[in-house]
Length: 83
Figure 1 (cartoon, rainbow, N blue to C red):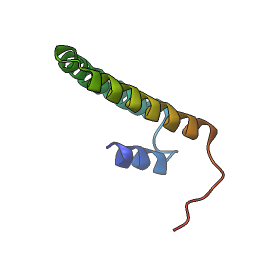
Figure 2: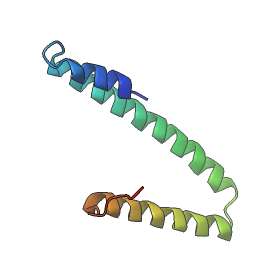
Figure 3: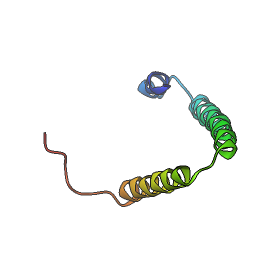
Figure 4: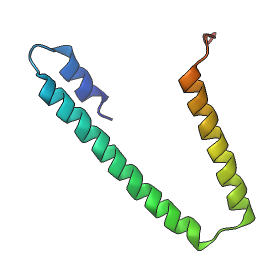
């Protein structure tokens, strides 16, 4: 969402100081973190109301996929996408 702002600030490095760039990035990270925390709290509250075996299986599967994506991003792959 803030890609345009970040790109505009990075386009003219001599016109915009480091302080402005860091404050913009820290504000973005803080707002995304707070929004994620709020959504996570709402999701956690809704899941605690009705937990079934199926919910637990889906939660584990989702966690496994997230871990696999993280490992792939961390260690990467040399293969290029062929189009």
